[in-house]
Image (cartoon, rainbow over the protein chains, first blue to last red):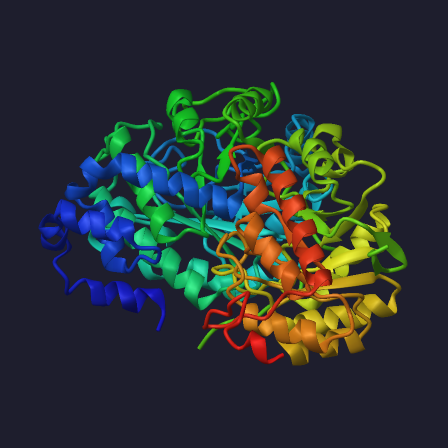
Length: 378
Length: 254
């Protein structure tokens, strides 16, 4: 059974009622366990857990150190193109916005890669909008091959690809795939993605599974927090991660917790969440899935990012530009969204060291040939 | 001299160190210093010879034996490629094979590990495979040319101690090659326990790296390993559920 079917089954449950019925005593019981059930995870996301954040943080900190050590992995995004066929209400790349789009040539991509690599980064996340005509899989493959000259780990956060395409890219050296469902509530999803290929909820939901089956080494998922009730969204993100971890144990799984940020247009987040609520999500995820990586991007402001080091986070982006061509002075495109932490890679390194954490730029070597793996537990 | 010999190298200190979880690479030389460890494992995935501050190898003293590991490999093929990469990067010919296709518990895949052992031993590597404690799999690895076997005490990073004690004891009793307990040892007393049982060495990372004072903890582990080894050599007295008086009541008969 795929995750879509599990999500469908969950529709029969009244999550709001379940969340409200959780007591502080339930939370304390869940916190005392070494292995958490999905019900425990729900308890930690409930309103009743709000008063237990400190205890959750103590346990999350200990688990993170135990499983990942006192290290934080660094990466940066690299936007290759902003052509897009979707009109996601919350995104600057939407077809609703009329501006001159750009796709990097291989030379321009190399210039960007050099600028990023010069900062000492070894892991890069390649991004594009969704346009198979402007940025087809063949273009992505060329990008991946080029980026491997400068980085030891190349991941993509592009449009959903087919399993065969992921396999081809993995064989070309692709290390990771990041794909956010944006919102797990299908009704809200349809409202947020009215047109374009992204309107297909199920195809997007199953993207991570296709990447796992294709032998991609690392897969990261997440919900764009702020589009719907955060407790539900965090709960389904955790269930999705658990499903992927159990079904594709060979894949190194990651979760991101992106909060919606300002962008071109006048869209306002329908369900914004406070810092303390973001913290509750991170802590609950860490306690539920101790071995899953959690990434925190420059969407969040420096003070919050600094405070979250050690509470469950394992990966941080640094010196990020969300603009096509943004790492060289020539970049003049529109940003996909606003970043809140503009510190340099060196400044992030210093911050981590001062917090007692070793910054790690390189956590993988791309191997000469990608190999298929099929470790699916039936 | 009670030295452990692996791959032709004499090893006096039977505490092997892992390096992946320290809060600063700067701690590594001090931890090695306080423990006297001679064998240090380094994940090749983290080795970046191009950046001095990020190159973990640069923090390991020259007199140590560097044992690169294939952390991140999911298949024998990947482990083989990583091992070859390690040798090409000048990391020597020791290799700790880690093939893990289960990211939840990080338990090793013995079958793939046997395959990787066969190929790498034939290529002249000194192969130390990390494995689930299984006598049959260990024999196959040794038949393929492994220099030692490294069964886990409990899952990596769990600090739960020797949960696999009975299986590890069988391996120690039955195998002529060194059995090195790797992973899960959470306290110096766990390390001492493994050594008392007759383990040839232990490998520790998490328990030292995540201690409040890693340098002090490394020293504590080193002492525990030495004590455990001495106890093993001295021959432990048997255990009994009943008390045995120092001056037995029937002593007058003899």
